[in-house]
Image (cartoon, rainbow, N blue to C red; front, side):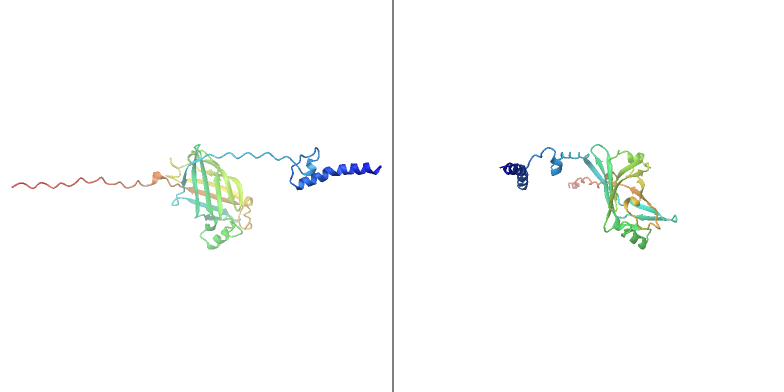
Length: 247
């Protein structure tokens, strides 16, 4: 008779745990017991993250003028020599936002890069030890929205640069404009340099310095620079035949 109460207490103790396991296997949602929630791995659901605020609406976009736009880069060797390269293939645009600010997007094709008019240097620049064009076919830059007047006054142009699969915030410097309408009547020019170490461009360290200097020389295609459509000449008045004199 004394063993029966002990079996009853054991059964009473085991019953909630068995019920908990059975209920859990059936997918039932049980409120966690006080003090046991961390041990059982049951935690309240985290609050939903707020949706990101939408950016300013794009009102219009203007693309680059390929006849005047140039994107180039420059490195220095350990012996002070300058090595220059060009990105002849690119795309991008300047967006006018609803709040009046501007935003620049640039994408450069690494598979088309040329270096010092040398086939050997060009092949090395496109290869795995430098730009790795097959794995990372583009270098991209997206500026932060900035005042429209920045292109005239000059100053810092900050944005996100994606190079060699790595994205970082960088700052380029716009030169003060040489005309009243930069990007249309004259070039908009920006310079900036980045560290090769920051982007794992670790090839040829024994011969090349760490800094890569980029230059952007941009003009835009503007409807103001396009010739007006040809004018349609006014219709000619009908010709009149003089009356023959009466005889």
